[in-house]
Length: 332
Image 1 (spheres, helix red, strand yellow):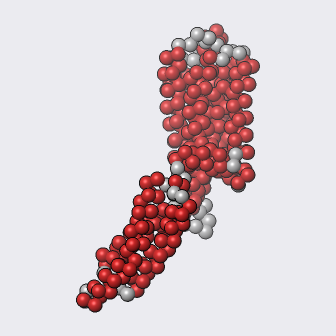
Image 2 (tube, rainbow, N blue to C red):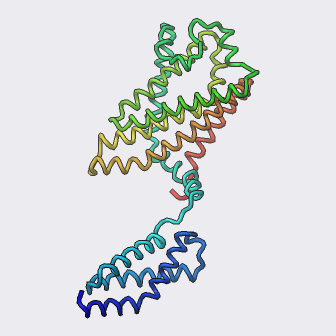
Image 3 (cartoon, helix red, strand yellow):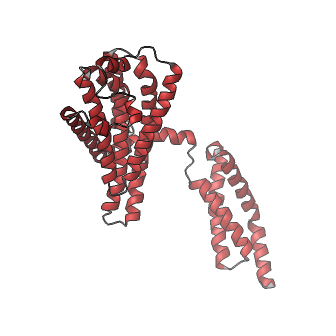
């Protein structure tokens, strides 16, 4: 740099450095405390000084001032831009927005994919139920040993009834059982959601298989005259749990559909676009599975009356449905 350029750069800095230092101070405060805690005058100065700094940067580039000054102004204006224009939402606000708006809106936009998930589950239940009635040996084919817990075609009616109406459960045992079930259900939902990206079929098949398990399990109890009883036993947690699995399936199907039918976008773009709603569906499913684990591990055994079980399970289901239908509707 020539002596003339150095003098020009020094003069340029000297004329504007006070404003830059003030902007740097305001940016540091906005980064530390958030824009919401600044008073009106400071927020106004921050915006005005940011515009001045961007103008100074443009001039500095035009007259080719020294690189150190350019680097300083570029870093300062980038920080100021984020302070002025970046979302100022805090973590609590993000959670609140997710539950009040983003999640139910994503559910409504994805209703067709979720409906396919429920259809896959329902067909699985029907097929599993019919296959068991034709040949009880199918029960051992469908039902994983850890979920059967010793129950099967060889169980007596009294043995099955004792499980449904165990009115003296161990609190610690229930806690351990809830943990096991939550782990199992979470794995299933993750597999269904994650496998959906592979052209949809694995998510549909796995959801259908879960329906087979449920259908065979229900048929076992119907055969012993306990259909109404096991329906109430399952309703407490099953309405929430099955809905969560179907919603996870819907999220996976969205990803798979984006890969299969990207339309005018590239597959990467289509997958990115579909992933925004699909990820929200996965989070909703996770929240519902947490609730289902609590209901399955505690409320199912603590509530013994069949009518109360049905009321509790389907009442909670209606609450989920109301959230999905009404949540965030005013700002859709």
